[in-house]
Image (tube, rainbow, N blue to C red):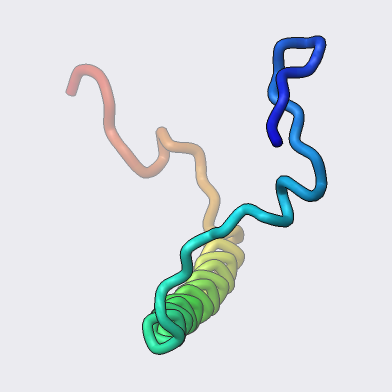
Length: 81
């Protein structure tokens, strides 16, 4: 049985916890849930790989441009013309 502890919080005994019944969907529904979760995991994995590839491409592009650094005033006009 549940009882209030001295701190005012409910205290649960091991036997009480062991006797708690948690409703579960039928096994066929559980399997469908697992299948859907696995599909989502596959999409996440593919997206992470795409992100890694894009980061690598961005780093390569940035590296290739490093030799082209110039002060802004040499490549653009600003102020009065």
